[in-house]
Length: 191
Image 1 (cartoon, one colour):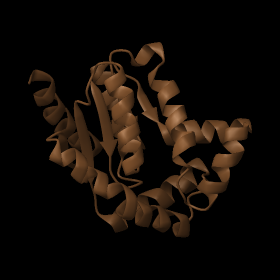
Image 2 (cartoon, one colour):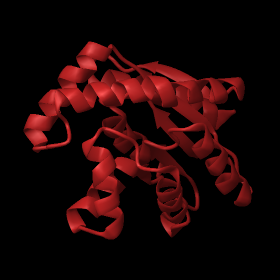
Image 3 (spheres, one colour):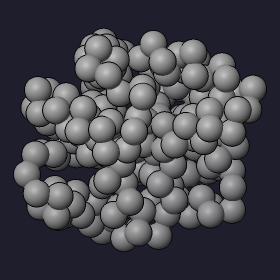
Image 4 (cartoon, rainbow, N blue to C red):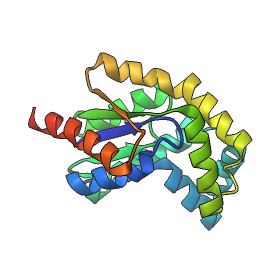
């Protein structure tokens, strides 16, 4: 399966991505993890990405597209993948369409987690304390929420028009959310 998981920062995408990847035997590919790894290693890409991440802005498309293309070309992604944090812009949707079409496959589903924005801000502030994430200040979190609404949320409509969006309530216990996702994706896999 070739999947995307979407939702505002803090909706639980990373948590759910792990369960989805395990169930469908596909890699969960998180652009945030790729960026953080490059930052911690001090790579040129990491230095560039850090400037944008510190301001709560998105890393430019050309850098992100190249990283995603390289990652989905790796052997563990031959039978599918779950993208978390990509695409975030219409240009990235078009780029991803080209990447997948080139392999002769199609995107199977987009899982969209819906959550309460104030609860999401609190989740992210708690995560910042637990994980020591300096980039998760309340100001940066609120800016990411604004960017999501402005730039990423409209992508859901693009995928909705294709008939592949599955909106899942992301509130409640983790295992309840997971089951909602599995129910939707099992139906996709059987169709």
